[in-house]
Amino acid sequence: MSHVGGFYTSIGVILVLFILLVIVSRGFV
Image 1 (spheres, rainbow, N blue to C red):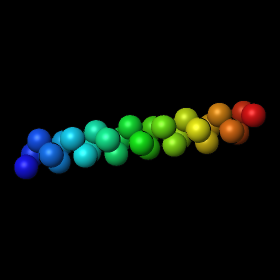
Image 2: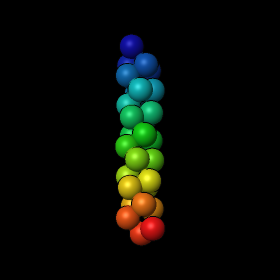
Image 3: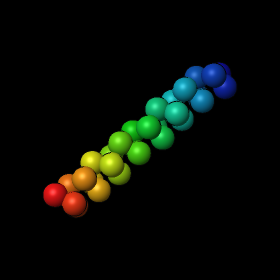
């Protein structure tokens, strides 16, 4: 259970970082 939770948590963090990267890149463009 903890492995699955950590797996989804890491995916959530990566998704958030990716979305922030897209927003920042659009802001500079």
